[in-house]
Amino acid sequence: MEIRDYSQVDYCFILPQELRNQLAKPYGILFTNNAELLHFLKSRKNSRIITVGDVVTKTVLDLNLTPFLSLVDGKTRRKFNIEKRTGMERVKNEAGLIRLSAISKIKELLEIDSDASKVVYVEGEEDLLVIPIVIYGKDGDIILYGQPYAGAVVLIIDDLIRRRVMEIFTKFRIVKCE
Image (cartoon, rainbow, N blue to C red; front, side):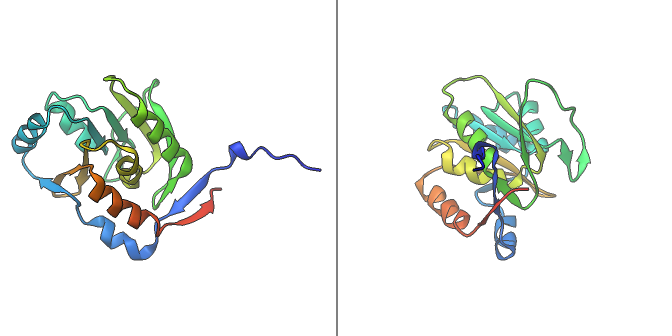
């Protein structure tokens, strides 16, 4: 009889080709001006700010705001631009999918009731990780992610957006990761 340790098994949620164009469109409010973005974020001072992407994270930090959670991959338009620092949480997440292990780490960090800023370094690509943030974030949390060549998109979590994201996520295909 063989005994297996299934705690080491990771599952991948694969983005279907037919959803790629749909997810490329910005959901939320597109900001092309940092002064307007700052004004908006300051008007929502009781909301947690969650950034997804290197440029939008740097933008928020340059505005002297501290994100509750930041996900970065060290690449901007596929060019390496940040140093991998120790002390960061790390997850593996390839392009075009979401790993269950990444979802679990994001859920864990979003449940921490602390004002301490957290950074997750994504080995791979962080773009689709907006999905588990919407699913497990609190109502009123503000997610900022970059829209290439356009600006920063602000998405405020509520039941409506959570249901919409869940509807999309249920269309992903689940496989055991390699």
